[in-house]
Length: 265
Image 1 (cartoon, rainbow, N blue to C red):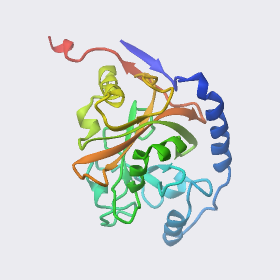
Image 2: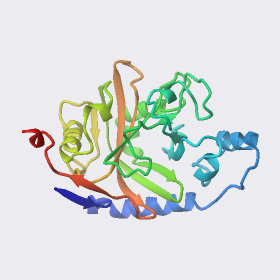
Image 3: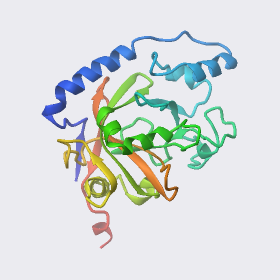
Image 4: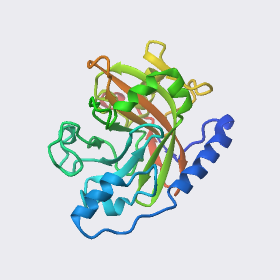
């Protein structure tokens, strides 16, 4: 059984807050940068242009690297980077290469081949390294502080022709496993299994935003930012947001409520 889902609304209590934030987001994305002609100029654009300051032109950035499909920005952190997916399906490539495809121990912010670049999966899992210089996704560990978590409720994602806003409803430490491998997000049961982990009392250093306890369901859309925990390299820190703003209104998918195991009985 399949059900079409499109950016399901969550909680009436936060509608005004979300609307205000979305207005700010649209204002942020209102300014554009001029087209650059040479690779050197493109590189400078990538290194100096930020979502914090102005609009990010994905079509221009793709001229640097075709693997770039989005840009992620988290206010009051250093997380302000392009997002890539290796076109050859190598999920390990961007662990050791930057967006210029140069060897770099800091890597790049990336999604695995199993995720869709149109952000229409139930769970878009973004990976990033946790270098000692505080770049890439190192600042995700700040969300394990309750005060920081409470004061930073939004994740912004720019795409080519669209802009998305996610409400950070959970942050916690978990065992260092690949979420895409551990849970089958193509089925509703796999989506629910991850939600059960998020809301589990056994989750380590678990913060869930007040009013959002068990509010997110399998027919919503979430984003998970993941990095190595700064104190325990055998653990990972994840920050999870639920889609609450879709400027173009194009994020949707069919949810498969069938049980794949029963098909083999």
